[in-house]
Image 1: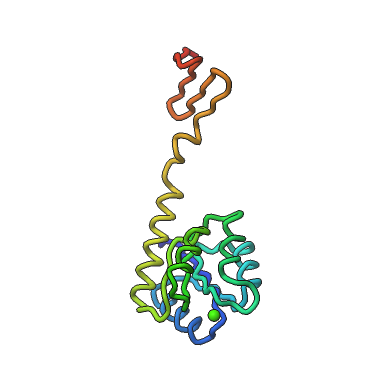
Image 2: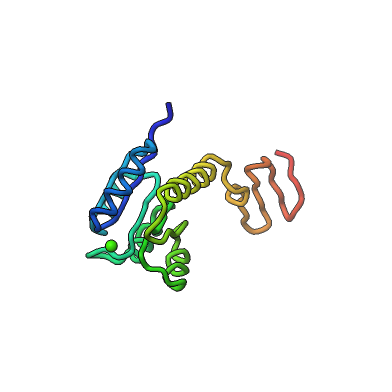
Length: 160
Ligand code: CA
């Protein structure tokens, strides 16, 4: 059996947190939770959840700042779940690196569908071969293409 995916919910409203926990647990996710931004960041760095569900209106740190902080060192998928409905807020969150945005109040099935979709995208990215460009080194006239096991000097292939 596959290990359970872990979902971190950062949400200060207990009834919404419990509601999401219930939905996710019933779909076999392992749920971690935090009701402040600070606690959320600690869990992200200590337990590396597979996906983060983030409320923007938190008591201590604005969710937008959490996205910024997390993106400094992690590409863990983040779905914003917020009562803020303005396009400006959505665009800002997505620009800063959130992967999706769900407006409260949401349908439980929509939540699960979006979580699945992000996890699918993320695990595919994680298991796929890294982009070819990451394996091409260029210095001066010399190019080493580790993917093709090829060395070029001034654009000409060299036999090794
Ligand atoms: Ca809130």
